[in-house]
Length: 430
Image 1 (cartoon, rainbow, N blue to C red):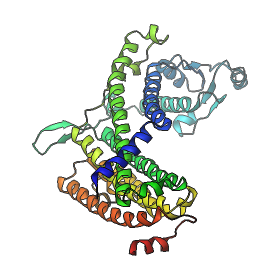
Image 2 (image 1 turned 180 degrees about the horizontal axis):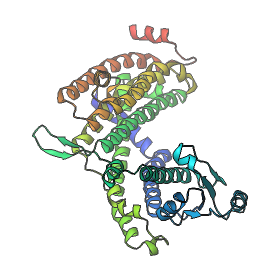
Image 3 (image 1 turned 180 degrees about the vertical axis):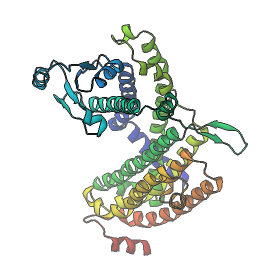
């Protein structure tokens, strides 16, 4: 096998695709989309909604309406002196958003209340009103039960739970499990998408060369195994280039997001044209992402490359055995099935990364690219498990490369009809 020939194929494959409009636009639009996504988050967090609603209270108990008005005077108004018909007319005229009638039965017998409203406000309205009413009714029941202030404070109090990780060295550190779980899920999904995306590049590239009969010219000067290796390496280098640009853009935009959001908060009236809400004060903390270990990104690159290499050899074999993209569908199932199985197991690993299913599945070569990086991000994975999964993936890649080379050697020069599984077995045995 000539490495020079492999390099020439790699160079041709890489330069051809890196100059394509599709690659250029995808490389640009993903960071732009991410920037727009961050912008939307900042906008939603900083911009105080100007949506307001007013709920009329007809209180037959003479105790609930004052409590609600004291809780939120802009939201609740005491209309106990008005009739129900008057309240209905006010809702229809959009003078108020809705009304609630309180009676003794609602407090004594816990009869459910009814909110009669115009339908505006959505979930925000229903959730906030329901929460306010529960609190006020509870307080009224406690008062009528004549419990002491101490017992009432105990009833109202709630205890939070903070978590901290204890490292193997005996040091405590902040627990960012929720954030790391999201990172692990995202990384797994990225590898899932990358395998299909760049594997599809390999398949389509082989089919295009077969359709244009370019493969006959190339095969006359390059051995099939050299052509297969060069093509896979070229697309793999393309993936590294694109992901490298995206990661630089991601870190750059994430670094700038906090200061930009803070600048909006310093001069909200000038920047946004509205006053700040209390929730806006928490925005910088929201955008101040926890620091990720460098090893996590190293493992991400390793499993991305190995996952691509493992599956791209099979995608190339499928392309060589097909004459069009449509013909690849019948051969795609055995290759795509493990990827989708790994995706569904990833949902389990996200919830329970140290379970027996998660541990064993993450070391299965065809599942490892997606599952192992998810587990590494979320929990402390023993190094021997990571090392074993990498070794098994390399061994599996050697096996799939051997099988794919057998199929590729015959398939690239076969025309007229798509090969079936029997044909593939025949080619492997040759």
